[in-house]
Length: 472
Ligand code: BES
Ligand code: MN
Ligand code: ZN
Image (cartoon, rainbow, N blue to C red; front, side, top):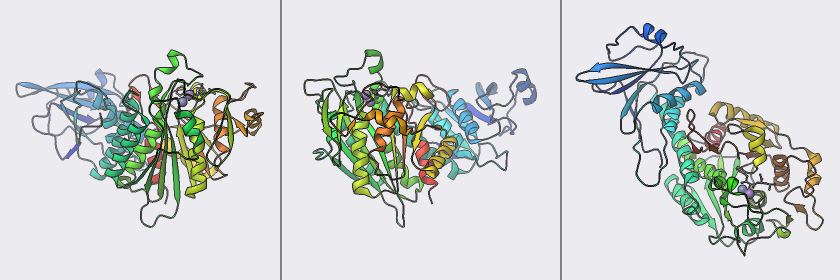
């Protein structure tokens, strides 16, 4: 469930603290009797001080034991501190309290601060469970800049919210349920909220949702801080489960498809954190929610639909459903919201996952400054992106004999799957500065690793919060 730990901030660990984590090269405080000098211990364990390294030293504490966790911080970069915080948190059992001494800034040229340490520790202690509750460790930061630590906490909480939404099974997570979650996030964060179930004109969202017992929704969240001049629209794919529809997925490919609303989860979580993060621009979040079900009322391969704004699309493959719901939302944003920048995020294609694997998101953009800013935010935030090409030559592969566009390359004439999907979306952006994030790979992790936990990762929350915060 969400991060249940509320980190505390103190000047010194409690006298009876059982877990005390101290960065390499920093004094142990309060004076703790180590069995050997620190240097001897570190050299015995061949510890070099790399981020992720933790040397555990038991020391006597009254009649019990204190575990001193000597942790490496590498060069002290944000990535190093995230990894360090995560490794420390993973050493501590649920229910126990760990006191983490915050390192002094080692490199004055470094912009990294304690935020990354807090973010890593909190994200690594995230768990999701339906049934018996698993108690997370209590985390107490010792020293350090409390404002920076709170910033890390904000980012971690938003990411954990996205993870919760993604990890919730589709038996619970209908489009209406997802819209309700967005409503409660909006209420907590003071955002505007609107939900559309009638979906007049939204032919893509309706066609994808028509096979499901739980009908589709379009969610719109609004954030308008005083004095904001620019307007960014975020669009998230909110497919609560993707069977493929009548173009049915094989069992192996289907079983993780509750993840197919990860883009929408990211948009909801980011919107919920904008005020706390102090984002200075106007932001609208759109989430196109539908279940791509297999049933007698499902759309058929060969059907022709009318997207928002009037373009017709021949649906040759019902498993290419994400682009149909996103096209409606993008066209609506262009026609009605006057955005300066549009960014969509979606678990759109298996091809993006094949190309870049599980740790990188695919970035497509029609605007160079926007692409550069997102790449930089990716590096800084830990949600890394790789720029992909919008190859015009492949656009003709999406021509249809009977409609304005086909939703897939009918002839399979060799266009790349992730590129073709991006080219399809571009048709609906009205030429506005637009970026598309295909996160089919990094939205889900197969194992715990650093601050990433197995299951839904919340990829994109840190990235978009970093990007939006940086807009002056
Ligand atoms: N949701 C899937 C993409 C996906 C695949 C996400 C694997 C995460 C992991 C998407 O709706 C889809 O099915 N895409 C098809 C497109 C194809 C039919 C052109 C795909 O990638 O196979
Ligand atoms: Mn699909
Ligand atoms: Zn999908």
